[in-house]
Image (cartoon, rainbow, N blue to C red; front, top):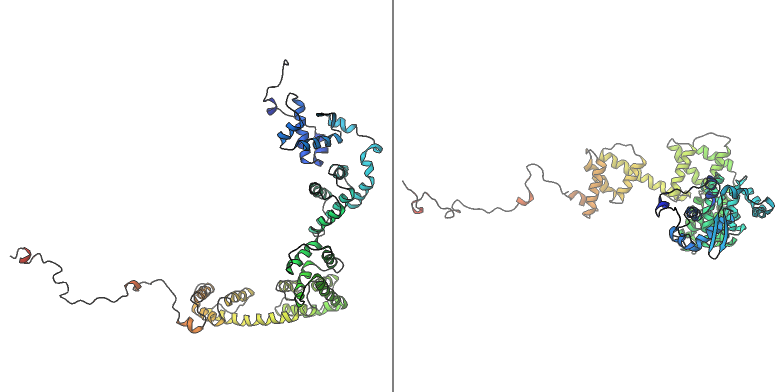
Length: 484
């Protein structure tokens, strides 16, 4: 036994020094499990009496022995470890600064073989940090992803992140952070060919996502085919539709016995031709005139906004109807026009016929709302919220009952709530006509001085001798009382 040695629990409370060069230059770019193995092995170097086999390290780190050996060989490639035995495997930990000074010259450096790979990466992102080049090479060498797969992943991830941020380019540091996670995920799931990589990225790009939504709307529960994804790519790219415009055209496919992507493609193509053949500048002038303006030379921004409206599926006549409606309300601005059209798009109102039918229903609803408001004493200020409220009441009862309930609620503190309560009572009682409503007696609490219903029964009639013999007169002689 040695003269002096650490006690059994010394390692638990001791400190293992880690060089800052490792923390700054190596750790940020290494897989997390590999870092755990390096740090644990570094601690074992200080306590050679502790068991330090691949199996014991795997047990301590909750890993597999093979994973531990992969991590140790990774650090060996980095020059931080030196393999000195194979059976059993043995490694010597090197001083990090010394290992960095011993890197081979450029012509012997494995990175030199990746000059074309690095040039293509730099073409995607511009100037890169050396560690970012190193990281990308590790995906090829350590994760066994082909170089063309890594380059495709980098290109498409860059495009996808820009799309998700509204066209704004993300920082290279952030992109490589996402790429690192994706590379490890692909390596784990075997995404190691260009064909698999394209399919994987397609699932995240807008054309594939749009194809999924179109399939859902068509009632087809399956994944999009490559041809369907290509059509969506054409609609979003070459034809410059947005997602809302494509989905707004879907109701037109119901005219076909077998709605399909090809049928939708024809619809979108026809809409595109109608919009593109007109003089857009003149069309925008007409819209501005309908809004009550007198702009003779529309800006390019307004023209582009108008073209975007048409791509959403609106017919030019529909846009004019919306402009006239805004003007009638004293809201003749292009921004308000876009708000109205956004609401109409949610309601599926893209054709003049659909808009006319909707406005006719809305006008009738406004007249009914005015009568109800007057009956309830709410005045004549009718808003969209008022119309929506009456529309909800119409789902509970016909118009005559609503007007009758309004009259009964007049003078109350909250007449609209009273109307709702009365209509619910009518509905619960099965009342559907005005006559039934007028004859209906609402259940109510008993007021002061009002006889309870439980006491309203026929009383027994008795005469003055009814209780004779029921009580004993204690003062009578026969009862033993004192008669004196």
